[in-house]
Amino acid sequence: MGRQGGVWAAFLAMCFLVLGLVGGFALYAAPVPLQRAIVRSRVLDAALAAGRGADHGAALERLRPALGSSAGAVLDGTGPLEERVVAARDVFQARMERQAAAVTARVRLMLIVVTVMCSVFGVAILGMSRRS
Image (cartoon, rainbow, N blue to C red; front, side, top):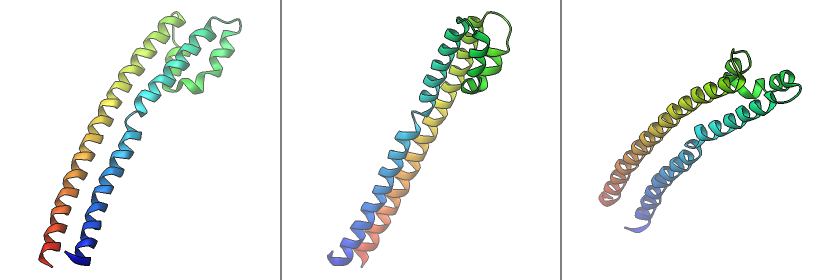
């Protein structure tokens, strides 16, 4: 195999290193919807606690930026605050479940495509190294 074979083997190893890097990036992307859901759940809990306080109007208004897309339903809606928070939590959790499923599907597809590409490339590299 010689020196040229060693170069091809190193190049092949780099192909699979790329696959490992893609998997590493996927590990960071996959928990994002869950992390968002946990943060939003904590903010909704804070809204419930703020609604029980003496100056609940101002305390709830301070939470508006943290509530994000749930702010309108929680702060400007009608009915008891507890019911509005429960409804906002249900809507947000359903959206996070859809996002988690979408991230999972994209990560799986990405890993499959990169694995196939690395395998095909690796076979081509080994074929070229054997010919020379």
